[in-house]
Length: 85
Image (cartoon, rainbow, N blue to C red):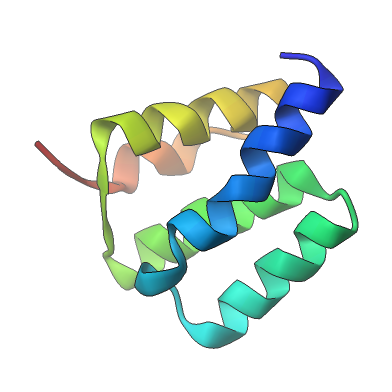
């Protein structure tokens, strides 16, 4: 995944998960997106989803994994996500 693809895909995440996140976290993710901090955005989003117990689809988990790996961030939290079928 090239830097432009990382930016495009990560930039979509705050809105995609907006209804499942606390407003304070969402605001922080938007700031990270504006600042180009895509790896931090992906890991913070994943950690918040785990902490709040929000459910994600298998496709969403796959997208988070792809972005975490592409940005060199750890992926261990993905195993703790609540995935709906």
